Length: 372
Image 1: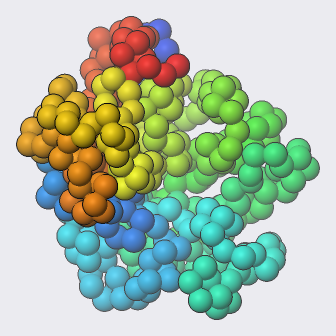
Image 2: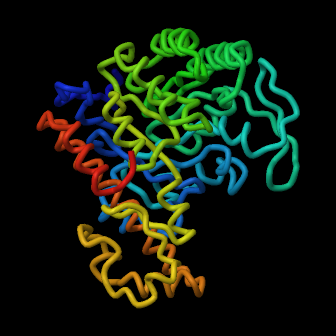
Image 3: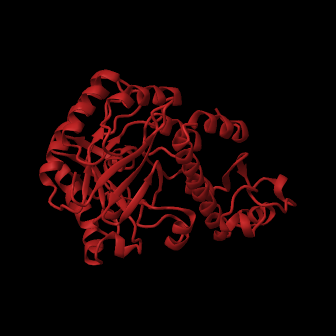
């Protein structure tokens, strides 16, 4: 463990092995399991930091690739780092930029050296190496930084997935050597696609370098959910016990529940704010699409069980009006509500872990929510 970071497992649920814990970081403690809102470009879209805290956010995520492109990591460093730049005094995690390099850009070539690619903004050519990813993340100054990895898509052959896993492993060694800041915690990432032999080998290699945290990458990339759960079931008994386990890019209510049941501690996803901008809300009775005509004269709150600012003050009819006339307040209120909903879900899961009643909690949630 680092002097700045430690993880304490407070309780293990006796039926599932789910964990409740506390992750100590330089910018505060994070109670786990935790959902992390995504602030891709140094802001969680449409939500003030003040309101994020009120909603229950303890840690947020930002993106290395996007901040490198705009405004530039040197600018963020000059501002005093991400915490000062975006006015967030809690913990921050930055991803490595690897996923965006592979998914957003026109690839030129993946080499052992790194990835050559064209910017999605202006077509300019760039090279991301493990060393460069770490240097950018050190400039950004997040508490938790991620290794540069190759995320292999669902559908890769065993040979393709093995090549990506081997490259990820080699890049991890270079990331560890490149890291200089003791106040940042580097999480290695497990890859291997849907192949259990590759996942096991990747975990073995990643665990050698994991000090206080490990990421599970390459899931929720198009595969059926039962396949993702099967990989998590396989990994659960093999994962290090004394550090947080982070399932990257996963954040629908059902996946949060199923991930927690399989021993995952940390999650992030853009889903909550993305669907909000399209007029969709998570509620205790399932998803509500407030744009729909059914809510034109519905003067009830979005979710009777929610105490967020949106639900305490506004009706479905008003939210429908805002969305249908493209007023930004609609997306802001729905974003705040969706984030609050997921935080409330995580608190419920944490309480159920302590009570050794996680399966009962999940059954009751699904019975009302209508999925699974």
